[in-house]
Image 1 (cartoon, rainbow, N blue to C red):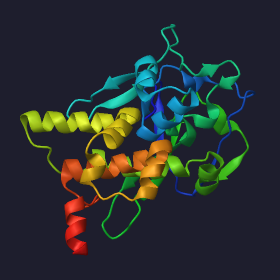
Image 2 (image 1 turned 180 degrees about the vertical axis):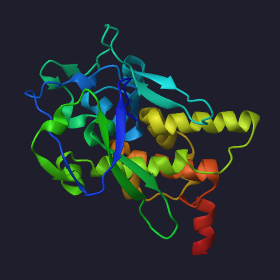
Image 3 (image 1 turned 90 degrees about the vertical axis):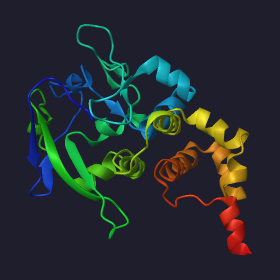
Image 4 (image 1 turned 120 degrees about the horizontal axis):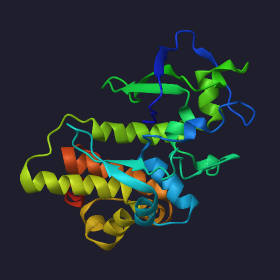
Length: 259
């Protein structure tokens, strides 16, 4: 979620097309990059920490803060704004975004909003788009027109949306986590696998994890070097460990099947 304190209107995208552009000559350029309540998804964190060649934990400590909304179970990670009066994003400059190629999904999709829902009849999340009109934004006065599909392609959103949809399935799952110590441990598991990816890699490679689950040697090689493969495993493990979904196979089960 990316939000500001100024007036915002959410407009249904009935025609499938919208007019918008953002560039240094637009009067409000970088105005949307301050005083944000910008939640970072696990894939956002992966891209940003790798851009700076930082560990997950180091990036979390330097640039983010945990946040728990009232009534929610799982903590979220929020980008920490600058301490100056206008509270700028730590990655914005007068010339624009300094991490543009790896900017978060909430920044990429703007000025669109995307609502998703899952249906057991469809393998992918069902989606609906709408316009987010903020009172300061002059980008809507620009002549360039887009379809939703053109915007998604131009902003290179597909990989972000794919990972974000998998993560949404975890945080919106109706299953219960239990009570007391069991619940507390599951929330810690969620935090590690979602946000602290380097610690999750050590958990996979340096404990009994690979002896417990049937994971092929090719995938194990990828887990050592490709964070995207590791994040995909993290999401499958969370669905298995938190809710008992059949997203991973225990080695004893695989052995029984072969026998």
